[in-house]
Image (cartoon, rainbow, N blue to C red; front, top):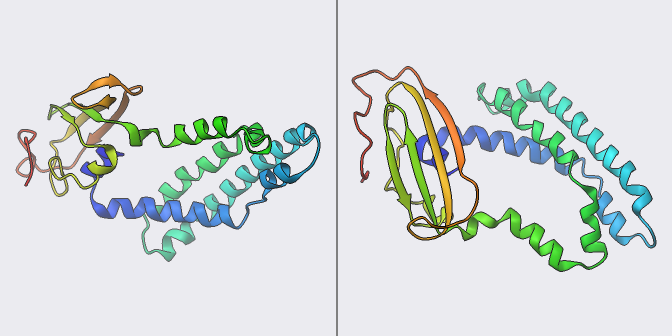
Length: 214
């Protein structure tokens, strides 16, 4: 996400916002509340798990089909034709969410807050990253270490690439998270992103990756 924020233009994030808003609306109005019902139900609930998991998976497929069908109309409503394909792709997330293990409901039902805390913590782990090593290979190359926490990086202008033109060609970006500053202490597996730049006039393309933008 940090790479995307620094490379793409603000209007491109508007496309993502349109897609995420679409998914949220469809999910909110079709939420069945099965997990809440299982938590409140007395006695053994294991016999219900398979049925509910199947229903949630079917719900994911149905929502995907509906969003896929209505995506042209949604993009037309926002007057943004480019949003159509993005909505179709991101709506696949609904199917993946349907595959979620429904058994985690036992954490709340049995008051196992430690396990629930660990599960929730895993979703917010990036907040604990102390530094990020960024490596880029391609027509432009760079290796740098960001010591700001990821959420602070959103306002960091030192590598702001808005309005900058990359030379045409294939690029490979790799980010390695660390728990401490200056790339010390492993925090997780590296993230690799490959992308291609086309259509940049030679006269507009950057010759070298700047040390800093001001």
